[in-house]
Image (tube, one colour):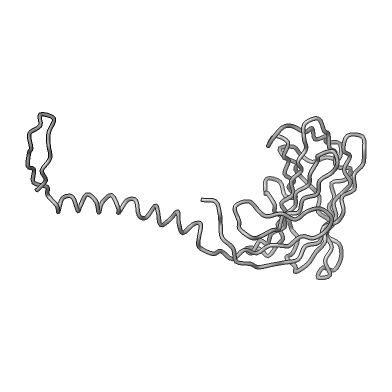
Length: 209
């Protein structure tokens, strides 16, 4: 029984059906708790990541939404043009994935003087040639000039297989080196240094929900 005072100042008694209240609370908790647990687990359950650790001139940075793993290589030029490279392992067909992104700021023009990327590994019989097929939404050609823009509009992903982001035919190996083609940035030629990659497997957690 619950006693409360109304607006007229008089006290009133009401019988509270505790079983009904219990069912209501339990129902509400039954809806909320799975969501809370899902949110908590997504940020706490360890996941085993596999990829390639880059090394070479430039900086190595962490991947978005993944704690403790740093496998993104950034090459930044004086003009503000940046090349972001991350190599992954496709366990379904045992090939190497290459996530390569050109960041071109507004007022800058970039042109690939060659579309061929050269990958070398002691585990292969010889150099592997990768030809860029798409740059952003454009078909890749040596005549293509990429005009920069603000924000995400200045980000251009390279694809070696049309409409297949990051996919390559490169067989998976423990170590390899990737040589980029020269770029014409405005009126100057820039020759990126090669980047070395070493395979890794590491436990980490997702930090984005």
